[in-house]
Every structure is written in structure tokens, then in C-alpha cells.
Amino acid sequence: MDAELKNAQELEAALSNVALITNIQVIIDTDKIINDYPKGGSTDSTKPTGIGHQYQYMVASNLTGSAGSGTADLVINAVSGDVVRFNAVSEYDNFNNAVIIYNIQKFGGTDVFGPFTSKVFTAAGVQPSAGASPLPIQQVNGMSYWFYQADVIKPGTENYNVSFALYTMDRASGNMKLFGYFVWDPTIIVK
Image (tube, rainbow, N blue to C red; front, top):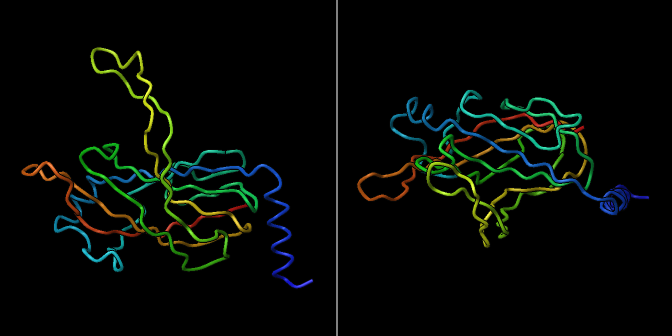
């Protein structure tokens, strides 16, 4: 049996079970980036400005057997056929400063994930009421949810470059303006 057929059979077997979705929320300290890079980042999305691990941390769902939540590197527990969804947010909940992950690219290690794709889902949600209390909540139909996701294809350790765009509020126009493209290199271990 050739390796390609064996991999296809393993993937089909994994998909016949219920695939788990692991959500990885990336929180980016945009104020710190803006302070440390006052001239902004790269204006070329293919050549983002490299930054260290002190500007972001990741929090993962499905934490059984996982480690590193709250850091810039993660160990997640997943099997072939599971889905990993990345989503980024600024410390402002993308209100005054906003971030969008636009590329996750392997630069070393095992091929843990298949290709990443951008997904936007529309579903019902809730939002708080304005006033003295956020309760009662308001049901909202048609909220948009965004993820950058990939299938897990096998366990291992993969080194990535995660690129994101940082936008800041231009107070004069009231519109979001590109501050720059940035990249950092987390290690993600799937066991």
C-alpha cells in the first residue's frame, strides 16, 4: 500500500469520527506594538515586520491534554481530521485598534496542518444592552464570525510564521487605517 493511499485511508477513518474544533484566540497587545514601533510596521503584506513573543498570547479551547495557553506557543491535543481555527483580536476587542491574521506559513518541523483558509460564518449571537447593566442581553441574528482555519493532518511539532495586519483608528476621518503588517513565529505542537 503506497503512503498516499494509507494517508487517505487514515484521514477518512479520522473524519468518520466526530471531528473536534479547537479555537485558538490570539490576543495582540496593539498598544505595546504601537509604542515600540512608532513609525509603524511594513506596508508590504509579503514582507511583514518581525516581532517577538512579548506582544501576543494564545488561548485555546479543548484544553484537555493541552499546555501553553496564555503564552505565544501552544501544545494542543488533536487528531487527524480535527479542525483548528485561529482568530485574532486586539486588547480593544478590535474597536479602536484592530488586528486580522492573514497568513500562517510553516517554516520548519512536521506538516501538522493542511492549508489555511479564511472562513466567515453568519450565525445568531448575543450582545449586551446599553445602560447601567449589560443585561438583559439582546438576541442578534446575522452576526459575522471570522476564523483562519486548517485541518489537522498528523501530530507533530510545526514552526509557523503568523502574519497579521494592525489597523488603528484615524481620529480625523473616523476610519480604520493600516498601521502595518507584522509577523511572529510561534511553535505549535499537536499531540
